[in-house]
Amino acid sequence: MSFHVFRPIWKQVELTTRPLKKRRLLSSDSYTAAPRAPYRILLFGADEFSCATLSAIHDAREDLVEELVVVTPPDARTGRGLKTIHRPPLREMAESLNLASIALPPTPLLKAYKPPTSFLDPTSSTPSLLDPSRTLLLTASFGHLIPTTLLSLFPPLNTLNVHPSLLPKYRGAAPIQWAIVHGEQSTGVSVQELSRGKFDQGRLLGQKHVSMPPLADFKTLEPILAREGANLLVEVLRNLEKAQANAVAQTGVVSHASKIVRDHARIVWDRMGSDELKRLQRGIGHRFPLWTTLKAFPSNPNERSQPPKTIQLQLLDNPAFSVPDSVPIAELTSLPPGSTAFDPRTKTLFVRCAAGVVGVEKVKGAGGKWVGSGEWWNGVGRKLGTMRME
Image 1 (cartoon, rainbow, N blue to C red):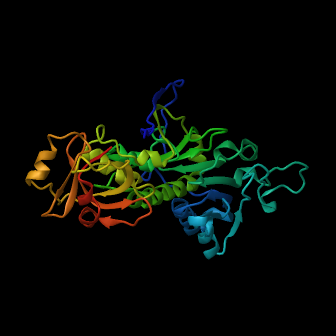
Image 2 (cartoon, helix red, strand yellow; image 1 turned 180 degrees about the vertical axis):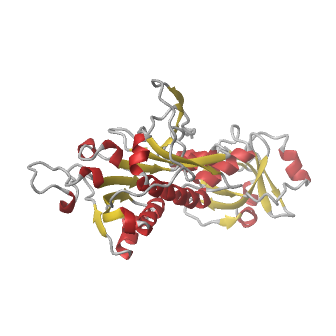
């Protein structure tokens, strides 16, 4: 049985541009200026990250908002048999705040979309905005490219996106996840112009650095960056004319944060060390649990070997837990990566990896449920004889 191994996509390219005059990007301690007249705002988003943006804009509605319309993808059927209907959290929040919201049709998602009538000039024979300078199109974790035909209705620097990285670093669909996986010590948020026909290549109107919390995983880091990004966006909007005048092109090293897929969660024991595996779990385990294949070598040579099985693992990731020095575990360091040993004292399964040893907290077989590694060992693992994970 062979498997294609996906490695994290991490392309780097140095951006070269014509020299620019040095300009100061808006940051949380930059300046305060009287806000412009309130805006008509279209906010495109979907998930909890975009909910933080809506919350911040709604809190600032007295001086920033004349009209606010929320646009989300349609409901989606999920789960076994597609029996569960998932509603975008952003739409649910908009409805709870009694805001106008629009659910886009499944297909074509944005091809024929036009802003609400109240945003448009009724005297124009073609779609055009009633007051372009005071009309904004904002996106936060929307996940779809806004068509150029729609963006062209707005002044370019009136179409803005909140992105959870310090662009041009981690352009793409999963910047939070890959920052965790790669062990970044700091990250940040950006407010950028929506680039035509491309993701994450617009001019920057504001950025803020954010320290990475110790042992941060996606579920703890996402709300932090969502809040910081939302607050930065409100600052930009309150100083929009100055932020637009000081907008700068992205320069420096470009890196890409590809969309997370299941194959990114496959453990490659002879390439990944214990620290890397724990970061991988923190970064993408909420979406795809780490998985591997288990090959058993029966103790009885007359028994027929079973085909490799796919299992999911939850690794121990507690700094207070130390790998025991019992004989079975100590011997792992001299065995090939993927070799396993069970420690009866801690009732924990351990696996040798490229650098070090990792403990397994829980195991889940195909079609089964999560069980502690000690329970799994007593019920399944002990009967398999010698095991190696591949």
